[in-house]
Length: 394
Image 1 (cartoon, rainbow, N blue to C red):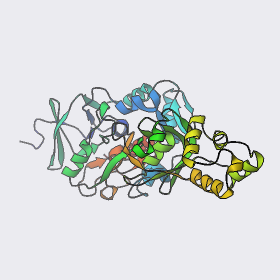
Image 2: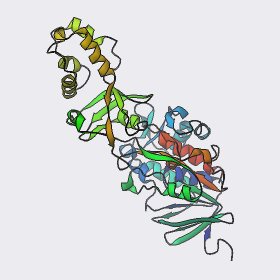
Image 3: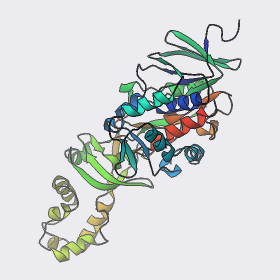
Image 4: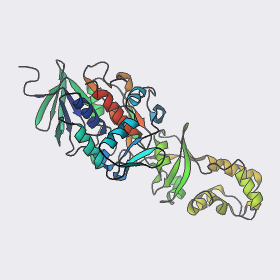
């Protein structure tokens, strides 16, 4: 009996019908490969559909390797260089999908994110799909990978792990990729939630009471700095600037927020000279919404008017406003995380093909790999680029 007896035979089996898996399948199918895509969800592209508020922030025109986190910051360069945002935009244009640029290079569909899923499915051509098929076993031997999923049994010399990370479990996300990677001898960089709201403890209750207030800030975690909006929530901090900083934040460490922006040094002293009778609350309201200004002024405990404040106190207040420290008690976890930082270690993979170095025929792509982009379309671009690299190799 042959090692694949009773199994439908393919050139490549892709586990996961998300962004990376679909793009890999499309690339391989275009090369004439017989491809099977397996997913436990009954519909493809679950994360694509909900992304960007339903309009899919499908790439970012400012994509560059320094916009990605990885234990090896050089790993993503090859794939990103060989499949660029301009390449994906050209594909979107060929399919007649209208799009627009929002802020910071983020590209969105004018219509629905489902247009991107439909485009990818068309691009997959003759690839076969086994959807709504939970994977029951994955084995390897005699140069073949054998997968039992749903009611089917399949075999191929190439297996692509594209099942993502555990972020957003409500759409079916799990840590399956990490368990499978361990099974096949690949190492992991500790996964953790990323692009995720942060929670504040009881000592920061004053700020938790500002739920719904947003302000333009610069959020800092370590050496990373992001200038966008921060949003105070009933549990802590969110908004684009905080989500960005969260990818660099580690439990037990602090994050800092600059509320002052581009105002010059000694800005409060200049305000004192210009408006000595103004209250600190009124001056801070020129920076941030009034409710936040009131909370900051209460914490700073300055005098009733600027004239009543010593210059040293104003300098100290400005310094704190430029680097206001928060000690998050945690994050809102994978349930609210847009992506996963960490994952399958790149040391065991080829940056050219995404292939496992020690096991011919095994590939890892997309979010399950230890490459995580900034907020704003970068993670989709990594999905397209890594999927393209593997799709050319299987």
